Image 1 (tube, helix red, strand yellow):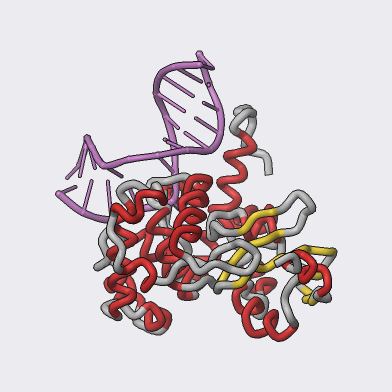
Image 2 (cartoon, rainbow, N blue to C red):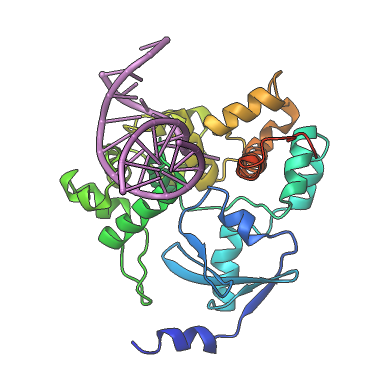
Amino acid sequence: MTQKTAAIHTLPAVSVYAPDFDPAAVFENGQCFRWEQRPDGVWTGIAHGRRLHLRKEGDALLFLNAAPNEVHTLWRGYFDLDRDYAAIRAAFARDTALARAVAFAPGLRLLRQDPWEALCSFILSQNNNIPRIKGIIDRLCAAFGTPLADGGFAFPSPQALADLSVADLAPVRCGFRAAYVLDAARKAASGEIDLGALTDLPLDDARAALQTIRGVGPKVADCALLFGCGRLDCFPVDVWVRRILAAYYPDGFPEALRPLGGIAQQFLFHYERCRAARTKTAPAGGTNG
DNA sequence: TACCAGGGCCTTT
DNA sequence: AAAGGCCATGGT
């Protein structure tokens, strides 16, 4: 038990060439809730039941505590490292608003998260703010997730939650969302909804299946499909995206970009939120770019 | 179609 | 220190 930190330092880092991977943009754009940067600059998080330590060094992404085999079988997919983001950015660059958003954070990427974790996380996100969502998910994992060797916890499976009551979730302090999470867990655990099948189902069928879950409407369903099932044509519309669409796309989002609409939405969402944070204390101007 | 549902972060006073 | 706005919404 005293070897847990030693193991991190004795594993040789696995280096992957990923010039267009910006950890801050990837982890802090609201698509995931279990990653954080330590004071020493290392990014750490838990996904697929594994704890990962990560650092960007120049054009290299350094996996600090993962065996090469794990990097290629698990993390390569999770971080979407095989997708040609240069081509995607080039396609987006022809659109005025998207060009700005891409220039602002060219290293942004979509994670390919676990379907259940994505669904559950975005149920918990509704009418909620990101710092609190993170706290709720931390408490949910600590209470019902499988413990990891380093003291962290895996995201609890649907089976781990399905037989619980709303009262059991009280320590999680997720409010009215508790009943929604439990309904989702029961439908996933029973097989009433096959989360694995959502990746290949016709989009409307996948949406309809998810929206039979209490507390899952169009926005949460599209988040689950985009972030958890790799459905890149899903375009979750929340209050921010609604503002973006009204401001930059009064005639609608370009049809040609719809197949990658989910990635586009992510660039726009990230840019707009960061811009709002910057201009909050400086209301003057705002039209530079 | 409004309004309501936990709760807490964050900004403003 | 206290108050109030604001949440990556959906149900009624």
